[in-house]
Each structure stands twice: as structure tokens, then as C-alpha cells.
Image (cartoon, rainbow, N blue to C red; front, side, top):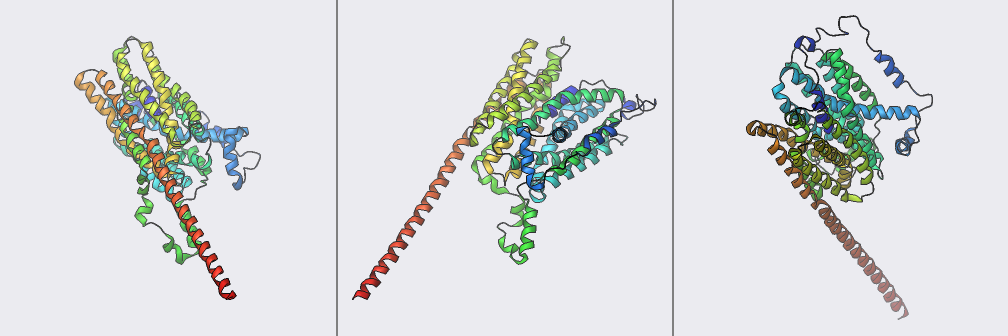
Length: 514
């Protein structure tokens, strides 16, 4: 998620092009007859089938788990790496390119468009979770990649800025949402003991592309036009489309369950249904889990100020440290340490039992809130670098353990909509928080108050999350107490039945003697 914002800040530093160059009317490689890289040959080499047959379907779980143990040949490792990178790329490139377009035509609206584009991707996640439950992770991810490919390709053929709001801001962002959310769900179907490490590896890819993708976009937009760049990025979406077919959920979808019941006994299908269709599609029962409800409130509450530094940090550095030449290094520091934090805390989370993983998120929110408040206090550029390094480290902590906590709270069967609803709630503060900070900057003439206030919501959200382990353990004690009482009642009933049967036998024997 932070890859959106960090890459956006670097993309804003790209040289400004005029409208003729932006729409492909001039530029190297367009009309000069220069050759283009043979990308098709490279993709064919990457996608060429291996000499050995793929693992059998019943060994797929063993194949996936061998990713962590290291028992993969080079082609299998390359395939999985491309698959993960494409997922992260489709998330990051949405905001990067959108920032390039807006900075070319409407630079005053950059903060609003940045927030709206991020909010659009996460706002669709509750809807995506419903599709994931009904059709499964594979179909949802493949369709999402196809929609994203169509939106990205159609954006490269427009001749004005207005259609980009539809083709890029809505269609492409929606496709990214449909491809992103299943990637969080599918991992929990295969990994139990090392789920934190797996999420750390996957999410660390966004930190890598936070650094590499803006550099690639700088080269492409300097030597080609913006819309040829979009067509080149379509290659990633096409690979993501192919990689989506590798999803094989171990937990069956609702549609598969219903088809199985219909195949076995069509007349008994309706009698076996426990929920009405609306309740079955919209799984509001997860909010009856009090610990999850508190989690779904605390996370969005913390995010009202969480993303403010990522959006406005570059502008703040330009105002505060005008003599510095490498101002982009602050965002690169956040990206690097965020990747380290995702790997580090993802592994640590595997050693933290159950719902107590929430305490790691509490720790991350506390440090991020404090670091946000310390940004205005940094009078030396080196001190600001240190603050950004710490902020990135705990940013990675927050991201990497989100999915493992969801699995602990609601279980694998309901985790899809649990993550979907949470990401949907997150879209509200992600959309509202940074623009409010921008308004404070315009009114007060400085970012100091904005950064001070941005540190408050993460601290409040972290305090709310502290109650989750206590609520969860209390609920577990009630369940265990109820279960123990039921077992005791059954034992008493069995004893009474045995006593009554034995007394009956004794009575019959006495009657026979008489």
C-alpha cells in the first residue's frame, strides 16, 4: 500500500513534458525510426514451459510450501517471482502513472487525485471479497487482471485528459483491486505456521518496486511518450493474467459448494441452506466477532493520519531543505526499511501466538505516530533521514501482519470478506486524511501543524487495538466454559441413564427370584 504513495512522490520529480509530447506527437522512438527492445522475445523465454512436468494437483500444496523451504528449481522460482512482482506492479503503477498525468495537466489537484486513486482501489475490496467467496480466488484474480489490462491499454489510445478518469482512474483501478485482494486471501489457504513470513516476502516486493519502478518510468517517459509507457506496462498486466491461473484455493468457494450439493441431491439443496441469499452473499456475521469489529474500527481510525507523511513529505522537504539536492532519498529510505521491516516482523509474527500479533501493529502505530510528530522538529536533513528510516521499518511491520491477524480473528472460511471489509473501511481515511493536511498547509502556511496532528490518530488507533487480545481471550473462555458445561451435562445424562438401566435390571432379577 505504501508503494503507491512513495512511488508517487518520486514520480512527481520527473521532467515536465508538454502536451504534444505527452500525447505521443514527438519523442525518440516514435518517428525517428529507432528500434524498440524485443520485449516479446523476452516474455516468450520467461513463459516457455519447463522440461519437467508440473506437479500433480494433489501435490500442489507441497509445491507451494516448498517455496519457503527452498526446494524449487530455477524455473519454478522465476515463475513465482514474476507472479508476485506483477501483483505489486499493478498496485504501484496505478498511482505513479496517474500522478504523471495530473502533474502534466492539473498540478494543483495532485494531492486530491492521489488520495482518490488509492481510495478507489481499496473501496472496491468489499465487493471483490464477495466475488472471491462466490467464484473463488482464481477466477476473481484472472478477471481483475483482464479488466486492468483493458483499462491500461485503452488509456494509451485516448487523445485528451477527460477519458483517462474513466479508463485509468476507474477501470484500471478496479481491475487492480480485483487482482490484489485475492492475493491476500490465497496465502492463508496454503500456509499456517509461516504465514507471517510468507506475507512478509510478498509485501516486500512493493518496497522493491517503490524504488525501481519510478526509475523505470523516468527512463520510459523521457525517451518515449506517456502512452507508449502505458502499453509497455500492459506486459506486466498480461503476465499477471496468466499467473492468476496458478491460484488453486484449498477452501472451496460458495459456488463450488452449491454445485456439489446440486449434483448430489437437487431436492435437498434448499433445505440445507442455513442463510438467506443476502446474508449468504454479504457475510455480516463476521461483525458479531467482537474482536474483529474492534479491529475493523481501530485500523481505519489510525489511518486518518498514517498516510499524511507519505503524501506531503516531498513538498515539506522542498520547503524546509531547499539547499539539499537529493531530496528523493527520504522516500527511498522509507521504501528500503519498509521492505526490511516486512521481512523481519513477518518472521517475528510467526513466533507470536494467536491474536497477540495485534500488539505488533500497536507497536508500529505508536512509532509511526511519534515519528510523524518528530518530522517538524528535525532541523538537520540527517535527522529527517533517521526519522524516515524508523518510520519505514514499522510501516513494514503494520503491512506484513495484516492478513495473519485476520486469519486468527475469523478463520480461513470468512477471511476473504473480513479483509475486504477492512480494506473498504481503510479507503475512507486514505481519501480524507492527506487532503485535510493539504488544507491545513494552505491555511497556516506550514506543514508543522499537519504533521503534529497526523501523529495523533495512529496513537489513538493503537490504543484501541490493545483491547483486542483481552476481548478475544474473554470470548474464548466463555466458549470453553459453555463447552465444558455441555460436556458435564452429557456426562450426567449418561450416568443417569446407566443408573436407571442398572436399577431396572436389578428389579427384574428380584422379580424373577420372587
